[in-house]
Length: 119
Length: 107
Image (cartoon, rainbow over all chains, first blue to last red; front, side, top):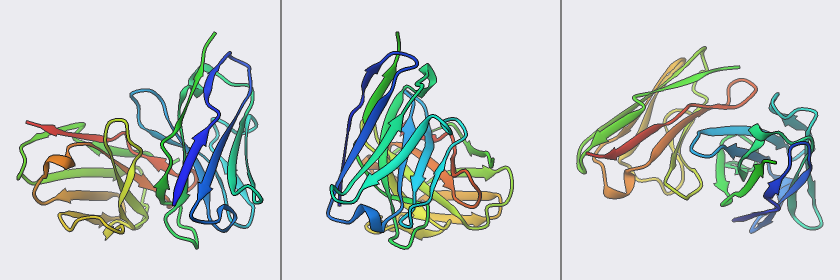
């Protein structure tokens, strides 16, 4: 199992960014896939999840601004982030559920991609 | 939203000592609690799920206990590689939430 995030960078407040998480060793669409973020020097915050059935859920802090999706043909998870704010600055991790049937515990993690929102 | 509180914030111990970390939930989460370890510059690693079950490949010196609102992660004898930050996480209620972490550092 390998997860490789990309797409982070420096973006101005109000801007948009799309994060990608390329998966190998398993099928993204058969698993619960999440984004979890960590502000610099801070703790972990769950952001969003897409279930194997396609249902999606979001933290209140990003609801209406972020969209999680997947491309089954590319075995890749995405996070479209719009209307970015300074408080969205964080290392964004892609995480796979620890169980195929879904548990909302995160057994597999990428190394993260850094998003910095600043003017 | 369920708030998780971890104590102490920092635990200073020597290798070979026993570490006892606490996680308290603002309301019952049943047994739906996990523990993660995070070392500097690394992603978190799942240690314990459903309060007391070790994840695959986790050494037996790590154990979890508790239910309802009070949980404990115990490291029976600290190895040098165990000095890290530990987070608890609940999945009982939406949204999934994490505790603020306990840093275990070398005394």
